[in-house]
Length: 118
Image 1 (cartoon, helix red, strand yellow):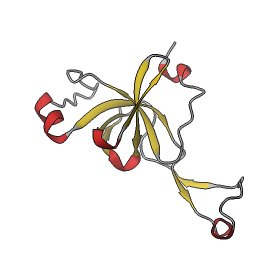
Image 2: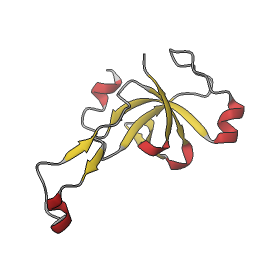
Image 3: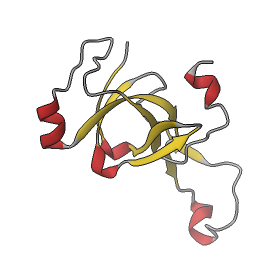
């Protein structure tokens, strides 16, 4: 079963991204490689995007008055990254979780430094 099928019931909120970490020695298909010295010094990590949140919520004028009420017409600014992209992100902003015994990181969009898309 592929990664997308295993995570079909997982929904990411807002401008966050679910990332499956790559081992330090792994290279991306595009040849991107972070040596251990860079990873330790800068505290960065690399992984594959598994799920992406809807994006950055655009407030509407109705939200200002009664922001607590549920809204069906929410609008979002979509994120640049897509499922399958390889990302380099700042580890200090990520949150480690385990889903079905697999390790993932929830990474806020602002912590993503770059992405590689094949």
